[in-house]
Image 1 (tube, rainbow, N blue to C red):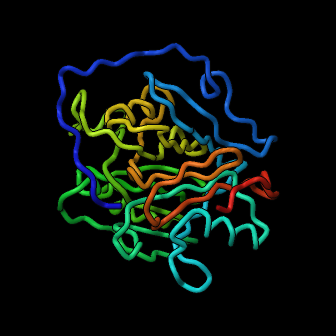
Image 2: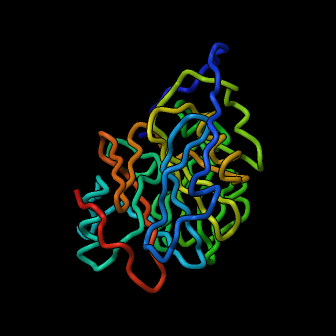
Length: 267
């Protein structure tokens, strides 16, 4: 959703850094196993991280079903995909939305712009400038600040606008305090290079700063974008994390040229 409080300073908080020899540090999830997602621990918080290589994977955005109605949930999306013989590596919510489940900002699906970019100011996380756009164009991924994206006149295959940016050119968003008290389940996306994309969702409530540091310090993405909080959801083989509200735009990852793991939940 579009509403969420902005974190405030809290000088008494302390970070506990735990040593971990996890999947991302040792090796990426194995594509041959039909899986892309794995648990990751960073600075005492747990996450599910999905690594996508666009040389062997493809990403698609979804909002409305064959009847033109919003899917509203990962379960509904997964049921349609499976009916079509598609087996995603994972599905996840992919940006903020209004009460009618329509995207708040730019939304491009299958090369067609359905919702135009928003450059307005206002309350809430989406308007915590700079916000940004995650997109895939000519088979390559990137995240750009919204103004920069619009200046380049890019024609993407998929694009979703959200906010705030978590990491901008290797630095944390300037409005994030060093420590905060606003803690929520969050999900987001980071781009390490044109082929390597990380999607992440927290296992529990985390601050903006902690979530951004996962992308910057652990995953090494110079740019990362917040997708949403509280409603954050993911469905993948052996992994189910569902929010408590209906969803707007969603994203799915697929193996190129063949079907993925058949164990995706349709709940």
